[in-house]
Length: 254
Ligand SMILES: O=C(O)c1cc(C(=O)O)c2c(n1)C(=O)C(=O)c1cc(C(=O)O)[nH]c1-2
Image 1 (cartoon, rainbow, N blue to C red):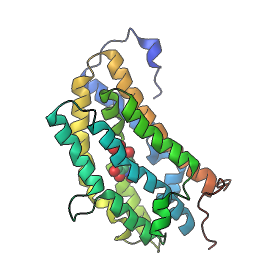
Image 2: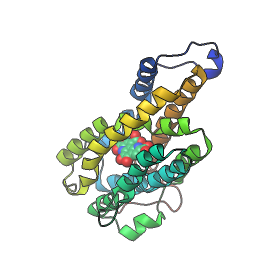
Image 3: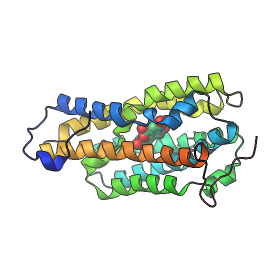
Image 4: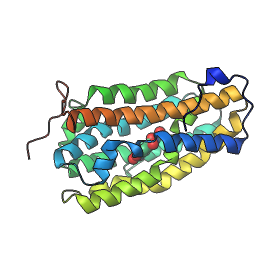
């Protein structure tokens, strides 16, 4: 379902909170990155080891930047209650005490795929488009309203189902992938619904005008687009026409 841009519908009536949620879910059905051809190849076992490495290496920058964006938003939240809620996300990704977080677990994934840890962390082989897309997320959360920033996290509504498909598809298809390598994803299946429960109820409660509701929907579309753009860049560089930009990771020939 494609929607008319907000500017054309300034007279549109306020949506009920549940109607807003239905619109948000429809955006995911139309644009979430589970629909991207690169993901279909990844989950369907149709990539080689070098292409899977390229995906993991680039996605490292997304994972490593999630706590940067959550810390950015945390600093803007006005109440103890909101900050306590959002702080949990930082712990999920950065860890706490001896417990590793998601960023460290993603490095276990890239190492399990045979990539050198220092090379991954250096970001030297990153696609430029990955950097631009991920940085755009951090900047969006810094520059837009808190309501839009919270709404931009709502792609997580759609992530548990893609994660389940990814883990089962990759384990079935790739001899070089083990359950241990994909352990990153297991806690996400319980963390994401907790994140979403809060963010969705916040958005449903705080989007009180149609304009704010349109801004919330636009934030979710923006986020879907930046996830999509990362996969476009991977596809162009490593699937077809296979034109990695200068300096980007080049898989070893198999
Ligand atoms: O595997 C995925 O497809 C996927 C998608 C998303 C997402 O929809 O943004 C996230 C994650 N994973 C994820 O692991 C994660 O920690 C995460 C945090 C966020 C966010 O916007 O705050 N999205 C996602």
